[in-house]
Amino acid sequence: MASILRFRKLCYIEPAVKCSSVGFESFESPTIDQKLDKKEEDVPELPGVRLKREGLTAPHPVVLVPGIFTGVLELWEGRPCADGLFRKRLWGGSFTEIFKRPSCWLEHLSLHDETGLDPPGIRVIAIPGLVAADYFAPGYFVWAVLIENLAKIGHEEKNLHMAAYDWRLTFQNTEIRDHALSGLKSKIKLMYITNDYKKVVVVPHSMGVIYFLLFLKWVETPPPMGGGGVPGWCAKHIKAIMNIGPAFLGAPRAVGNIFSAEDKDVAYIRAMAPRVLDSEILGLQTLEHVMRVSRTWDSIVSLMPKGGETIWGNMDWSPEEGHVCDFSKKRHSQPSLSDNNVNNSDVKRGFRVKDPVKCGRINTFGKAASVLHVDNMCMAHIDC
Image (cartoon, rainbow, N blue to C red; front, side, top):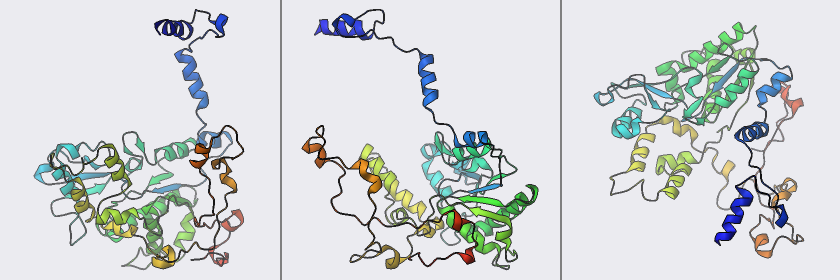
């Protein structure tokens, strides 16, 4: 065994030794520069760089609307336990205060049970600007990549805006406390005027889609319930809306957050460190605290699944009955029985689908429909 290891060392570690006499070629280990050059060649070109090379410049100002949990919150007024945290990030960033003073941190993120606003003596607000949701935590980007690509084609602060808001509050309370809807209306109008009267493109994400949908209705509603915009205000100032991961029908994980605080992330933690979240030895009742705080966040109610049996079905039927999925694009996941290199056990473990599965359907619109006015679009084919 020792002689075999010495032979392997001569062949694969010492580059000057020739081993071709026994059927091996000499091995030259690549240098660091060669590895870096190869790595740079493998990195795909950024979409913004490609569009810039093709001559595209910023055609319209862009407004980004973040979703739930992704907006950074900072402290402006707090209890004595939060001394030294003025204008420090309570949500987003490094989350170091969770470990330093967890009870104080939870107290300042909770909302009042009756008003739905911050408790007396506490003020937690959303950070304005692009830094509000570019990175959720160090190394965990949210909007940073999209912002970088938009900057490649000429976007900057004057034609790129992050519509930050306190995602804990109800949508109406964001206007009552922070005037977030009024601020968004003024910002869209300002960007429209200062960019040669070019309409604004809005990109909402997740719960931000529902939030902006409320804005579209609010802005043209007469005061005091609405923003007082004239009819047609949205058509005049907004070019298009591109929704990313919209939650029109809610999100199932919202149910878990309210009833048990169990979700996918908690499942990952349980798999990596079983029984740590509710350890009696360490005195941790993490999920109980998370449940108590998250139940004060009224915005989670807006993500509860909607539609009832009409959308989701029941134990006896599903809305997708009668719709067969197309598996023509999934042939790569079905192993061939005639392949001699695949044994029977591999075939049994493969992704072969014997019977068609009802996996739902999605309605999309082509380019022709995208240029039509909403009143001229035929919606008869959409089955709700």
